[in-house]
Image: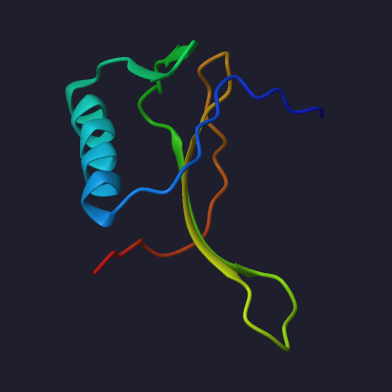
Length: 96
């Protein structure tokens, strides 16, 4: 299935700025509000349903024999019809 990018923003941010963005998303999710992403002329508003599929991934990209790029990815997914995928990994997620 082809992927359509509705919004994208990437740039260097310090840890406090990243935490602030994540807190804003968390507050919107807690309140059940829409989430609007804006950067320059780009803007998109999305409404994750309850429940949604939440994926957390830590990965290393690049050659295995040298230093690569590390990332932590957080993704909230849902079908446009509002139904969520019942699949998922066993066990609970813990972030320490």
